[in-house]
Image (cartoon, rainbow, N blue to C red):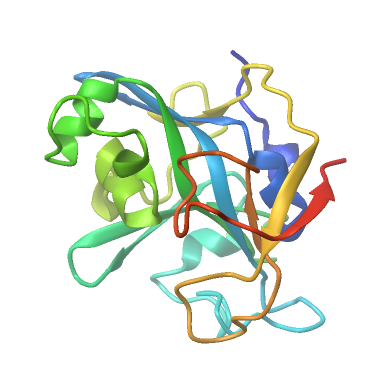
Length: 212
């Protein structure tokens, strides 16, 4: 399966985000390959945007914490929440113009037993419980800031990659972002319509938009 290349990510996050739906997020670990199909994402715009995004980590400019966002596209930006969970993003745009896409949910594909163990879930637990939500996703794949922040997902040598297995998707649902306090009404959350592993309410509704 081919890797997504850097040019794929060198576009505004609101363009990249829906095109990530259906792609595979892969973590190669000593226990084997863990992977899931991306079914939900959120775009966060950089401070160079016509209307800077107050919910984005890059809003106030580069810092030691968010430096990855201002570097080359296609790198993992991993940060901690609540002091115990992690969220994983992919950097977008060309170097110097920060933007990113938060990976919010996966449909488990490979290494499911290990993902269940990482989540302390019983064998046979519903797929929706494994990686539905950004904190669960990082836990299921075993991602941490120390080990994975800054990894180049476009590199064949990277343990963290995004691959294209040919899965085709023509439309996405777009809704306001969730779980944030600023710009909550911006329609920058994209999800795979009808997928059981999308986070939040099972009956997700939103505007149906084409993926060009």
